Image 1 (cartoon, rainbow, N blue to C red):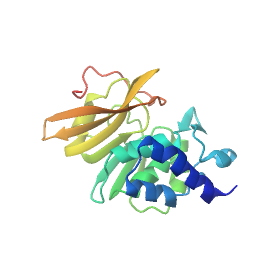
Image 2: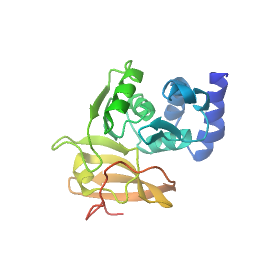
Image 3: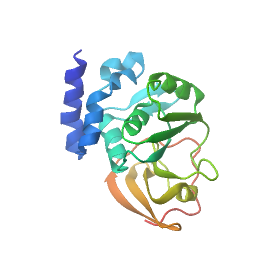
Image 4: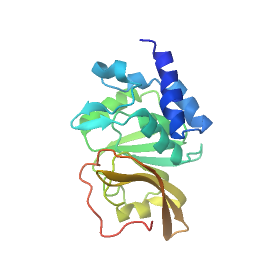
Length: 216
């Protein structure tokens, strides 16, 4: 299989048509070896428009969804970002190629260990194991946060985890109706969100339906 040609086709036929037009994101997609982040048995499907099983009931999202979610974070070289759900580690690599620092939390230890091996060449990634579906940390705040699994509504705790001006991207809703949303924190005590696109992705493990969420 010609991996370079398959990667090119993925970008031109799947990613670009899904409004992923940020040149920086596209350049990273060209450089990263996506085939190295999928389980060996699925290597030849690394660039297919499908979700790829990772084991433990988890999946690697399809390429266009991964790229679009990361693009919507609007990461800069000065951003300290948080990823909820490391999974395969590919979205972690995408984010780390665009941001100053990425902290990624994975609930399944085996997936975190596997991702660590794939991400060993990055010096701006911190991997942690734990349940972050309903918030993470007590005092630290981030410039950008990405939830790689869906939530029925955005847990209120995430509001306190964003710095003023910070952005959070999450897929909100329950199957069959979900919407990717961008939330932006304005000042120290308010935030707003807007719809980006409709999609359906697997839910975060252990996520709870909150009593309150960001204003929509």
